[in-house]
Length: 329
Image 1 (spheres, rainbow, N blue to C red):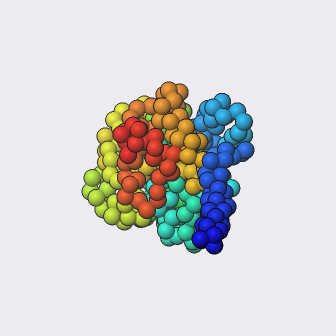
Image 2 (cartoon, rainbow, N blue to C red):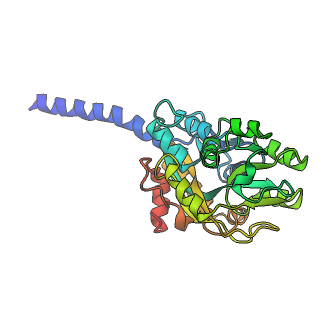
Image 3 (tube, rainbow, N blue to C red):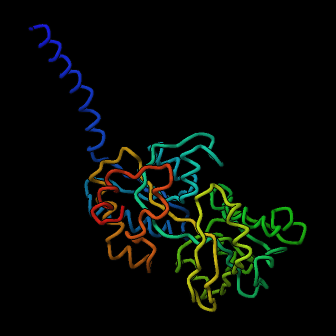
C-alpha cells in the first residue's frame, strides 16, 4: 500500500516538474518584440511603424521594435524566433512551411493571426513611357522587385508568360533592375524606370504619390491572359482571381481581372495567447489602422480567415480565440 502511494506521489512530482515549464513558456510576456515588414515606401513598412507604436502604448513594459525585411526573410525570422511577428503572403508561407520553392527546409514554428489585405499583382507604368498593355513592357526598363523577395519570383513568373525575361529585355534595348520601393520611387521620378511589378491593396500610399508625379498607368490584364496565368502560379492554392478596384488612381479606370494573393500576419508559435489575442483585437478593431488601410476587404475581420483554413499552417490559439468570438473562424 505504502509502495503504491510512494509511486503515485513520485508520478505527481514528475508530472509537475515537466508540465509547469510548458505552461510558463506560453504565458510569460516577452521583454522584446520585433516586427519585420519590408523596405521603406511599402505598405508593410508604413503599417508596421504604426502597429509598433500602438503595441508600445498597449504594453509599455515590452520593448516593441519594427525593422525592414521581406516576405521570404520574414517567415524565417519569425519561425527561428529572431522576430516575434511579421508580414507575409499566403504562397510564401505555404512554401516555407512545406520546405518547397526557395526554402531548403521546413520552417514550422510560425502560426497565423489572419489576413491583412488582398495584394493585386500587376504592373505600374510611368505615364508617358508608351506602355498601355503588358506586352508593351518589352524593351523597357522594368523592375520585378528585389531579388530576395518572393514576390519578385512571382512577378517574373507573370512576366515570363509575356516573353519578358532579363535576357529578352536586354536584347530589345531594355533592362531588368531589381529594386526596392525607395529606388523605384526615385527612378520613376527621374524618368529612368519604365514600369515595375507591384503587389498591394488599393489605395496604396506609394501609388497615390506616384500618381501625382510623374503620373502612372495601371497596366491591365485581359481575361484570356489571367485564365492562362493563374494555373502556372505556384504554390497551388496560394492565389485567387479578383477584380481590380474601379477608379483606383487619377487617370486609371481599373475593373480588370487580376491575379491576387493575400497578405497575412504571422507570429511565432511561442508567443503568449493573451498577447496574441490582444494584438489580433488591435489589428481588426483599431480605428486608426482601419482608416489607413481604407475599405473592405483590407484589415477586415470578416475576411480574416479567407483562404487560410485550407493551408497547412495552424492559427495561433490567441488569434483563434478572438476570431471565434467574432464568429469569424
